Image (cartoon, helix red, strand yellow):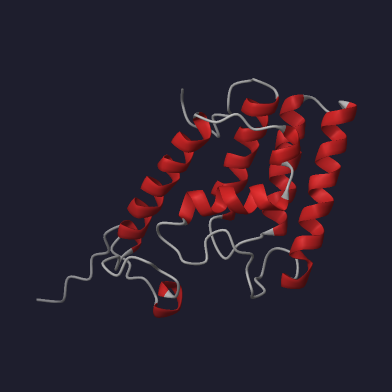
Length: 166
């Protein structure tokens, strides 16, 4: 008889390097991490749904960081802080604030001048934000939530389905 090395989804242990900054010591596998992150994200969505945000507030570095912190602040100690290392994607770590502020200024112009449709404005924002890759992790989910905030709070339109059946 041989060893049963059957892999089950979610049982992948979290690498020691990936654990840095983790606030919950009982998280040991990716499935555990996903569950805690999802709960934190759901809490952030509830917070957002009960608030009114203005264009002037949304298109600020402070707001972008605040949303990320709301999404991950109960799981990671670095939530809401720009990454301090370079990745194989995103701009150089020293360019994050500059590129983000360019995006925020461009977005303000797009909305003020009605340059694009509401959907295109939100999706252009999302694409550029995820391309900057501001944070160590969670950039895709964060950029989608930011696009949902733009479409719902600035344009009073339904949030995107992001490929989910509704």
